Image (cartoon, rainbow, N blue to C red):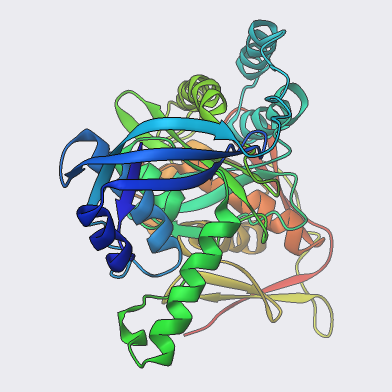
Length: 411
């Protein structure tokens, strides 16, 4: 048994003088309690065990802005002399392996039938719920800088969280992406209570400068259990699949193993439908030229009518009237599509046209254009009923405007 060496200096001094201890542990899958008799053997300050504990603690600490406070100094290793239940165990949860192979096969089959990234992600998260009971989940992918993850799809939340960001290397999700390993916590609420207690104490004694800004999690505000699985394909981490639950002890080692298998298949499927610069239809034109459709633009605003889309080139942010919509690459793309719609009556576009448009200044490789277009479509669906960007075929989009609209570039 291993215990982290962090805060309890007096307790540890007592252990070094008298190497016998008694601890009470809780089995997360059943909440059964056990009393364990231990004997101290050694302290590890390096190696596989130390690194495994350190990664998990670093992830939790950075989630609460305390990466400089929760510094692991070692792992004390104990020999278990005795273990007995405090109350009669109620038994582990019923094994959910019945029909697992059939469920995995059905999951993979449904993903194989998807022809675009938007459908693929929505299907994957819905099937995780229907087949495996993971009611709350979301997918985050890398942005163009490779320094952040952004939410591109979610399932089971009151607020979708689409567009929310996490810095790679910070928190449970960011650490899973940075290290390419799954990370889970079985009682996130308890760990947050401890984190916030330490934060309050440091603030009280005037040492709050050591604390970084707390990072808000996408999804459940009261998440007690969380499992973050890297989406890895071709030796590269494309993003993270994250499962959340408001029940403590929801995700165990077996859940982690199963979800790793499904996450790998999802990542390969993302590549297959064009994620990260996949191939486009050969017939697509090479540049965004004059349209072949729409003899007039029904949504062009006239004086005294319609809405205003405001675009800020400094950070490519877009507002619909005064309501924030999106920023960055998808904001730049939306401004260009709307400009072509208003000036040239263009309504249909291809991914290849967008990728090769010089004014957008998209990176030549690994631009994740498809993921950015999915994000833009979903933000429009959530934020306005005036403009839609519909997927009408592989690599093809249609911009629909149902009311008069103006585009204003803010200098």
